[in-house]
Length: 59
Image (tube, rainbow, N blue to C red; front, side, top):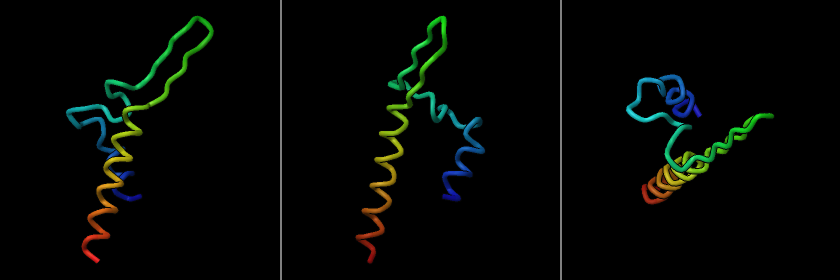
């Protein structure tokens, strides 16, 4: 959790915008907008899966 918080704090300085990756769904209309970070969720899920797999292999 600390790593994710630190990543979000320095996210502005990264070469890519976490939460604004290509593949994220954004719909803007007159009455409002809708944003769903689909690709960001997939990337975070893959990274967490990789970390848990490596931790399991080290046990």
